[in-house]
Image 1: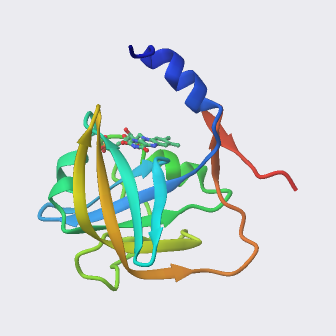
Image 2: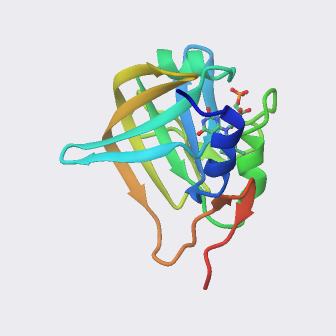
Image 3: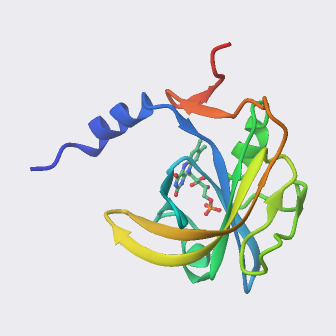
Length: 161
Ligand SMILES: Cc1cc2nc3c(=O)[nH]c(=O)nc-3n(C[C@H](O)[C@H](O)[C@H](O)COP(=O)(O)O)c2cc1C
């Protein structure tokens, strides 16, 4: 017996998550969207997963791409998070980014305090999302002490001091 989607979403709204922007480089150019459904899966080898809603415009490009980049957003970048959560926005025209060092990964956002360039190793259709597993091919980490942007209770939040 399954629970109602609304009640499930109410529970998940209370679970604080990181805010990432997942990007890929497809035949049509760069694509990307804001994603909180990110998880580290394995450390050796380094493997992560992201969950992409089938209803997004980005899902086909994310599935077709050979890899992707997970950009971890710092506190103070909620505008950029909302830019990448807005369909039809000029996402890459209105953000600063560079090409990944891994040719098959996605753009690296200049604002990211850390990023993981991944090669897709598995795609799983689960419910109303696609789960895309990636093996980390390269990564970057900025200065210590940068606070992450948090999503909690359907809004942006800060870590307590
Ligand atoms: C904080 C936040 C977290 C989100 N997390 C996810 C997620 O984990 N997976 C997903 O598919 N969409 C997520 N979204 C929604 C997408 O970012 C949104 O549907 C976006 O418009 C998709 O871009 P597109 O329509 O250009 O494909 C999230 C949005 C926000 C604001």
